[in-house]
Image (cartoon, rainbow, N blue to C red; front, side, top):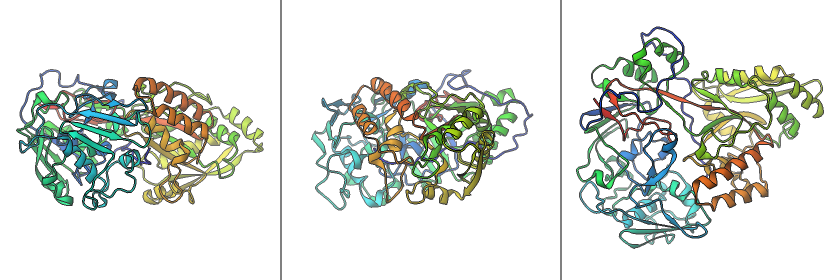
Length: 569
């Protein structure tokens, strides 16, 4: 598994004036009930209002999980996420391929066959050679930025530098004919069908490859083609690809004629424009701007606006991390005491309230796809158990309590900021634990906690998976073979337990996702009992959309509105 840092979505957007009455927080619909007064129809223009640009719009350079659904309108891949609401959207389904792949007995070889009738935007046929080339160019140093799994997983690919330097290509990928592609892996990977959803699996015609300039006009394999790309994705205009057919694509509905993606906007401006809904903004959505608690309270004063709040769940956990090589956190009883002392009610309130955060006692998110198994190894109730914490501290040799330092980010717009740090501080105080707060600027904070030599003993952290499975959730954090001593390290506990490592390998051989999920859940429980982390909450994402938007689909894979399904009135 790769060590991949996912930037958390904003938990509390800047407060904005929406000219609405105050009231209780709105829950809003999770799925397609909004806009049910009209059936979706083709046509019109969908506007996307975002903070972050669609920069480096090249399938080799995109990190799909952060792409806000826009890349999949242009780039089809061997497999894709099921475009369905809620838990049904956590399934992987075929896209360019006829199925999700045929594994060898040990899951080290995966074979795919392409559908009939696949074409690029210029009418030329899509072949497996185009997919192989698209993957190979993602290894080029000048096209860095995409998910790094392929370098780790493909046999003999660790030192490959892409087709610009090595014309021979990757022997690990075979294309025996234009419709068959075979992948040879270094080790068993039952999750390979999920990896095949990444944009690196999008076909690229070698004759049209313009290197670093390819992002200006990539060749489309999806329902839309790029007709304008201004200032590296600050403005991206997509129009229909005439050579895409619905018959060849069971997932994307592609209702609008045009999709206009506008970025570089302030979150307050985005939410104001969506709430007002003037002109083109009536048919607008956002894929990266959440509503905060004050905004939700204001929205609740207007039933029509409250009905336009979509709720999403993405596999993420915010947690307290320990460095067990640092005293007093080398003592398991100290870690357990802290786990008992945490007041999760205060923590949830600091994260924006129960509408925006769900208290967590498990590391894995509360979703079946991840293998979530309900458990609480240190049951302390909603507000903590300071008496039990004091008892454990006494056993650990601290009958009079102790003083520790909690490192956090100074950025209030993250899940690691001062509000959460203060909530943890207050909860531990009741157990006789004095917490000193050490706030660091965001970049310094991230560098400090992910460097072994500077890692603090106690800090706020979080993790999200690139696809809904226990593997990319547990392995980067607890697999000892992924400890990095000379770069970004995510195994903060520096756990190198042979039994955990071997169990990860065993589960990775399982190609049936539902079966594997149960084993990931059991491993989560086994690791949780060691108090190497204290899970705090799983975020909930709430976003406003325009009054003329129809066909709302929000899957538990991405947690955001799927614009491949959206229609405009």
